[in-house]
Length: 398
Image 1 (cartoon, rainbow, N blue to C red):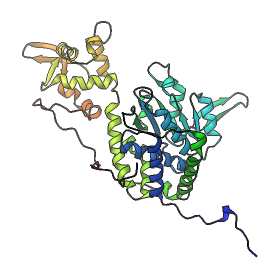
Image 2: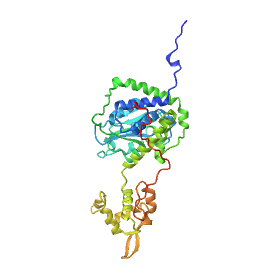
Image 3: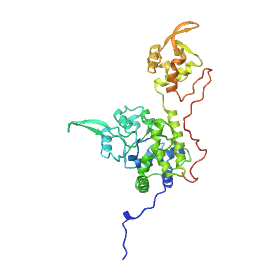
Image 4: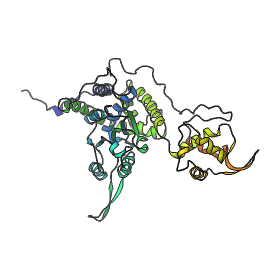
């Protein structure tokens, strides 16, 4: 007598992680023109990492931004939606709804996907500080929000930890981008073609690929949770890239090297496009204004600041930057003016040594003038990766 075994009891062959990630990457390339190979690697690994949230200490954010409409950001978010673990997509979400969605699944939260994020965080938006605080807190595990439930007369802990992706025109808040893989989309050039995406037709193949990806990741959760991969970047960048690099190391093939190259390149691009705060911009401009001088009177320093091209100091406030306002901004860095003995007589001003510590701490990415007036080379990170001149992936793959 012949018996049939239910499909659920059939032994499934183990997935080849590298091949599976290749297929996710090829799927992205079918529907979206990404800026470069590093962006494709970053998005692919982020999607895979959403399936292993219980293993991570950090929930990396994905920011998909564009300078103008019709750059493919919403289409990319659609594909991310189709491939990520338990996606929860919205074009507008209240903080209370997000808190509840996460708290209802504390051990395995949904992947938050927020489209049209510029309507919340953009230059013309009022900004939602509660939602921004939630997204910032939810980057690291064990950062619950506390709320008082008047109906039950008790304080409740609300979960915040979840992977999150945002798409919009323009930059997201610095505090969010500092925790994110940032993908800078651009409009397709003439001759660049992609397949149209229709969920009714294309959704099922994405569902099947998502299920395979989930099965592979979930089968290796213990290994991912214990992984401590060597990182090519440091500090916050290392935190946010660690889950993605761990997935790449698990997959093997070309992915470990590609992941580390993407981490270096995308972190560098993100940092280069972060707008400095008023205070750090002032520190950097003061360093330029000093040149090779050992001391400058306040009046001379202000004159040099105000005449710098593209600087904000000539129009800072009603009459431009004043000595009092300059002093107030610099005091945040423990820099104060003093009486200087100069060949021309005494004057209130600043010495180079007043700034040295602050320059070392806050302006390390700029080219610093040396005592001779020549710029020194910027310091290099302790871990670097040579970005390959050609693709790490076989020709023919997207």
